[in-house]
Amino acid sequence: MLNLTGLSTPQATPGHLRVLILGAGPAGLSAALYAARAELQPVVLTGIQPGGQAALTHTIENYPGFPQGVGGAELGELFQRQAERFGARLEFDSASAVDLSRRPFRVTADNGEYTAEVLIITTGASPNHLDIPGESELTGKGVSYCATCDGWFFKDKPVVVIGGGDSALEESLFLTRYASSVTIIHRRDSLRAGAVLQKRAQENPSIHFIWDTIVTGISGSQKVEAVNLKNVKTGSETSFPTAGVFIFIGHTPNTQLFAGQLAMEKGYIKVDDRMQASLPGVFAAGEACDPAFRQVITSAGMGAAAAISATRFLEHES
Image (cartoon, rainbow, N blue to C red):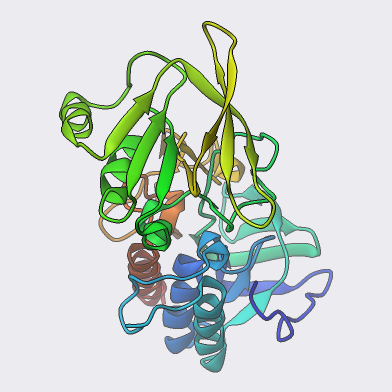
């Protein structure tokens, strides 16, 4: 988790802002840095997870500038400190309602109401969970939702992948760089992924399949040791030893507050090449509008672009 000691408590009516940023992951904090350097005095509502999903990653090894890797929470804290250095203000507060029908935009949060000339949405996306015994307890201890982030930790160890879509197969192929074997567990007898991905996975000698099967639990004391399986056709139950469990059953963008107010596609906010959403003065960045990459570096870049575009938008109005 990020160090929250520097976060202030907003007043019941925080007042009018030029820039309000919703979300404090890599996209939000990068947007805050750029907006603060433009002297826009941005305020960031952190939500319940400061640092975003990246803060839950034990070690991030693919962010430039950290050849030995960096802890997800540590990287988030560095982002925060840099943004605050230039005048960004972080509030440990969560938006509960948003009114985009007119400017200034109105955001109702747990601690009061905010108004802003510009809104930058960086609320991220949440990986879908299985909600089975052992999943939450062993997250970060062998249970992961990001092969790119955590695959290296399973070098020469067996892992399982749960899912049958494009993401599951893409991540399985990536994991073969590290794991001794990758076993894909799918509840059906055929995959939903594209034909090219299916062919590549089925021809890879390191990838194996368990069909018509669901995972009913994940077991282990200090780390993952096995998954509990149930065949959906026969009802038979078994235990399958593994060192890691990678769950890829989809992501849900955290954009429910904006439904009916912004153009979306499959829940992701639609933006143009300047990160402008469908309403003037509303910008989005990171996983709230990115179904393709979902990486810390791409989210950070999108956040910077959104803040630059927001700055130019305000300059044009003045």
